[in-house]
Image 1: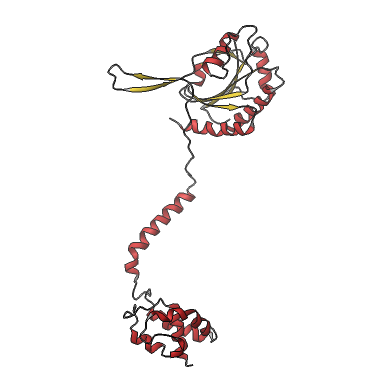
Image 2: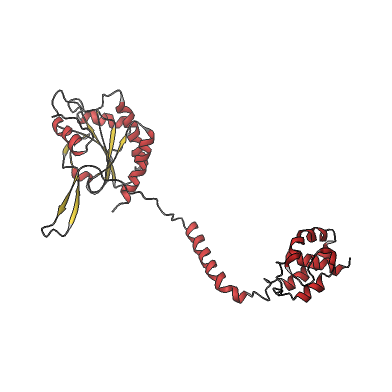
Length: 306
């Protein structure tokens, strides 16, 4: 078969199907001229029956030299409907330019080093009530808030609510001579302190439930055993009834009835997360690593809130 015939086969193999009466840039007479051989099964009018044989034509054409194929592709490109002659760059600019701008913006955002921070809306825990103004037109939800307190820290200084005003903080109740859950809880709080050690708007308050034993001196020794930075992780002691009332009615860490008397004792493994407005945002089991992992993440979410 002559070279022109194989060139025609290549052109038809790579071109989209011709429709009857339409050449899509190639007249039916051209198609007839390009591939006249009747044994190839093509409609001499250029209809789409050749499409069924395109794979066969392509395989046959590969038997010939690179020079033949190259020449055939040159021939095909002159008829291909998406060639620059038909779909010019000028017509493509309205599509290419917006895509280029969008791509440039995405690349800049990706490499700028300012990824979007994840955010989760934390629940607000505790009792609440609906408050309305005098004209009954405005309503507001008043959530449970931590009441004021005043206790001595590990240095014997009086500490009140001002130390955590406008800050996010974590609370636990423990005692220094505990040999069960308290050491585990303190190790987990040490993890929390290390994770947020450079955050000025974060604190940890550890209240004793055994104030008779846990004097400021005892608390200071305990803090030193964990190498705690006591400007951030603060240990507190005071009158037992006030400590227990704060644990039960303030931080809601114990639901048992009691008056903080000699026979009353609180022993809870739970931590409480408090937001900048003094509201409870979560409870976490301080003996479980996965729950403390969640606490560390939730501190970030609480800090992001206004």
